[in-house]
Length: 464
Image (tube, rainbow, N blue to C red):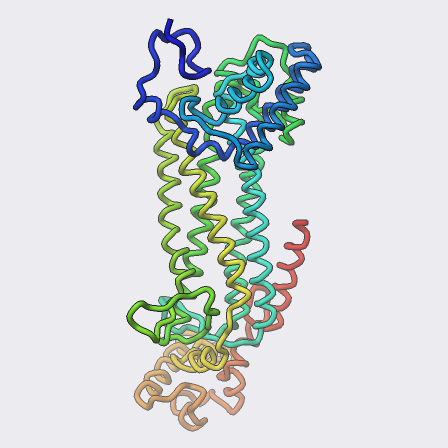
């Protein structure tokens, strides 16, 4: 009789798996990163089996001790992974059986690799989401701290990438923080749906053994067990949802990257990034390239691709588990790695930004950034807004011809467009007067920026 090459082959097969098929279907090369979670789930399962009388206490203890020894071997690099054993689960079970004998084969009682892998992925993703949350918090802390320092720093605000109105650099940084705050809230919300235990669903219909799913869920730190065995083993919504969160997060980091790249250019010259976040050119010695934000911008497409990959993977699968689901791990793992790398880079880089305040201010003076302030001034003097809009348009046209900003014009020059303009107009045409006038919740006035940063910092501290 031909011996099976893997514990999972059992007695059904009359010939060994083709060597190519064995390698083609194996997942151990990438799912071995689940080893800690696989062992954690197995220890919980063995503990529960002993409680309900399926295992003896002696068998439970032998299994748990063996699993802990295997975990130590893996972490020291002394464990040999085998493609013949297909995946992380069978590699660990085979090693356990070799270590403690037939008792090792009893560990799989009352479960299937279907609910086992679903449990492992949820455990792993939950741990990684917590790490991502910590890095996101670190990035937000850096942003809000910098916003406080730059609450009075004036820069141009843009629409259509054209100078629109003066804002403060601190206000702009807090806009980035608002994006990331929504991302953090999405991450927290998604974690609730990750944090449910599918263990006990077995292959698809549950098991005939008297298992206690509440206990295993509690032992693994889950909020509770999933409700339906069919859905438990076939659901990958949580992975898709994480990749959706990741896509939004990377979209935000990419928008931030684009602005950082523009701002470091000679044409803008708003900020400087420390040399450690940049590289030079192989041929042009004067170049200092903003490689970190450029690479984050590029990696965004990679994460979008993984989201589409998972959506496409799941769209035609009938219930319950299918081998297709093996393809969920590489996109998910790479998304996790990419997100963590991008967040770490940004959390390190943002506090190190060196604003060029004089350049920002000079840029805000160009482009008639206080034109809207002049229109608002005229409205307060009694002109209908549309008439005020026309007066300001004429003033700007004059400024373009004479190459003068509104704040550089004399009172006589301004009054040729409206008799309503008085000496007090210069209070609103200055950059400081413009930003200070936006003194309401959400506005760019320095006092509002400091208050908003303080509220954001309080939220960050409350995360614990």
